[in-house]
Length: 201
Image 1 (cartoon, helix red, strand yellow):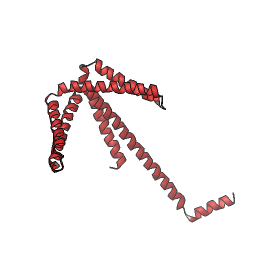
Image 2 (cartoon, one colour):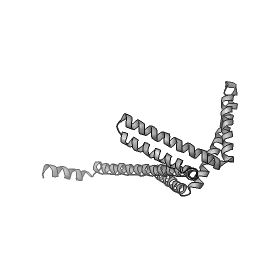
Image 3 (cartoon, helix red, strand yellow):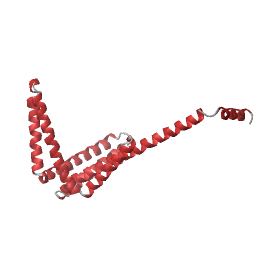
Image 4 (cartoon, one colour):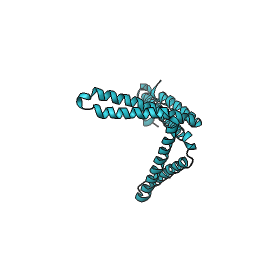
């Protein structure tokens, strides 16, 4: 499978996964939280291992402390994924509100080129944060999964678009090379005939 087809295939898979995540938002939300806990657990193990290996260089305690903290967070998340979903949803809503306000205030005060788009982005972030916060705690069962699904959909579409663009560029280069070879390696009598036609129209 060539790179362009591989990108299109990967983008299609991510697009389908994103659509499934949005449709089954509650399941994908819980899965995302558990996955976060697993990632923190793996990161904690690596941090502790790295600290033990570098103990002679004085790197034991910083990495050991960070690894233990990651493992503790992993344990708490995996043990109570639903409660942690509530906390993460609140965190997401506050981040969206803060990001939206920052973009709005910055775009309206600076008025740099493209400030309108920045203002729209800020207003969208603020609106999403407000919806999540106002519908809490019901929003905890769909927010994270929906955001993960939308992100997968956007990434999948971008991969598909890049794959199609690469394929078009390759086709244009191939057709240009074929036309160049045809014009360069024409039979001698054809080139003489064209020259005669130019001299004696």
